Image (cartoon, rainbow, N blue to C red; front, side, top):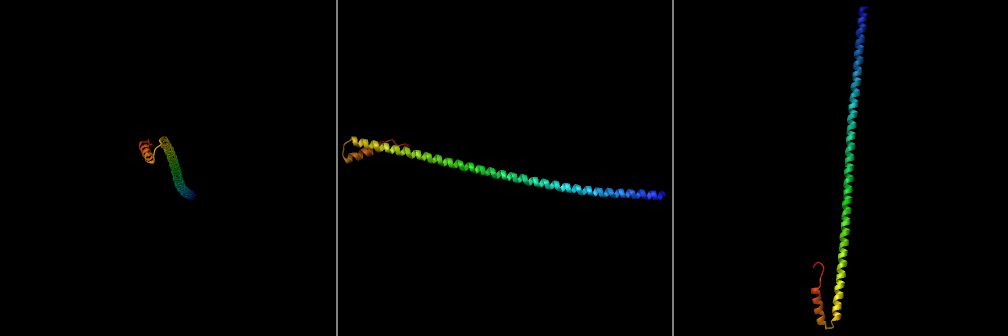
Length: 131
């Protein structure tokens, strides 16, 4: 009977060892699955952050381009407005000069040569903007 007890004790120990080995193998498998899942989650998160950064960059570049285009449009409008103002001032000045020359001619009752000389003299002495 002592041998049977010893045999049962050894069989029980071997069974416990086998159960422990099976449990350890299962724990190792679970651990490896968790590591694999953690690595996959980390890769997905990195990919997501890279895409988010690229989208943000694209948006910022697009907004910057829109601002540049708007600034260029405003600059063109301002230049066109200034050009139109200058042209209007020049037209007014030319009209004033013409009126002054006409007045001078009408006040002076002289011949054509004298009229030409007066016009040339007036134009030479007339004040022109920017000169």
